[in-house]
Length: 275
Image 1 (spheres, rainbow, N blue to C red):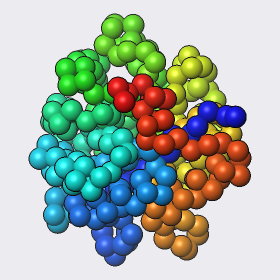
Image 2: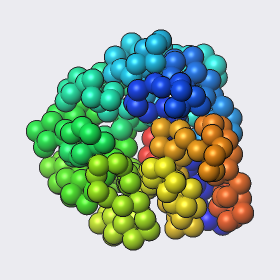
Image 3: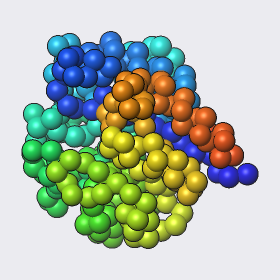
């Protein structure tokens, strides 16, 4: 039997709330918690969270993240909680992004380099990456190393060689981001995979219409899967998605392809978490 596939659901992201254009995107703390619970109950072993203010404004404020984490724990959520160390849509820069690590979550995102993200420059210079790696280690948080291009994989390997990131790293290849110029296709996935040891857990974050085909490819190729409204708002053309429905679809595809879906406990073992 194939190894279980870890399903991660990215609940909301950091794009500004716009109920007119994105009515299905959870944009308040209460909606984010409700969608995270729905994704977990549908089969997601990991929920990836960005925080928002009550009015929907993205934020990296530690206490906003604490509210989400506490609410999920109070609701009995067993999924791995993976907090964002992103920029809250450009509102936080460099070390301001790292406040959520002080909550000592099981996992958090480690964006491994700089990139053009839509109309903004998302900064990740090497001195900052070193400080970020040290803070991850100080709070015993497992990094999910997000690589938007081949150079980011190279930086991750350099940080490993410098003793700042531990093997095996949990790798996520982020493809198809508007402005980045990096395509979301199988050729790029395989190019990035060849740069890392074959026993490292890996997944793909693919944007928009590329999400579904690369979800299926990851299941076939032995990787893990990221889905969710942060990356794709549509179930199919003209039909808005929900986080729960996107997870349910991945569960069905995995069943058709004879790949078991990891429970949260199994995912902790696969991803190298304490358990």
